[in-house]
Length: 88
Figure 1 (cartoon, rainbow, N blue to C red):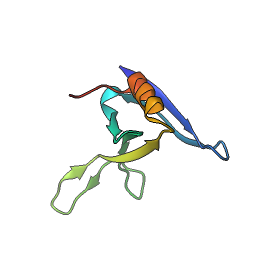
Figure 2 (figure 1 turned 180 degrees about the horizontal axis):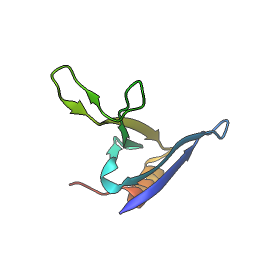
Figure 3 (figure 1 turned 180 degrees about the vertical axis):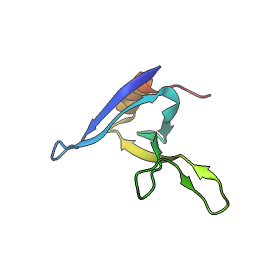
Figure 4 (figure 1 turned 45 degrees about the vertical axis):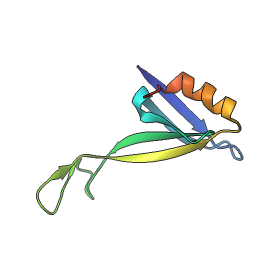
């Protein structure tokens, strides 16, 4: 099940993240944090998808991790219950 995630900046209201992700992309960090893994396609200098590596391998995507810090443990648990899943 995928969810659309919109994260706005607190001071200027700018859009920081707008993606649709599955449950496995979210992970609790300590007591008040959530890590969000976003896969992005790697593009070459001319806009082609996938870059050939030095040994001939092809890398078509990379992961970027965003950290979200909540005000309290309660806020973090509630938000994670909406978007993530417990692995243990």
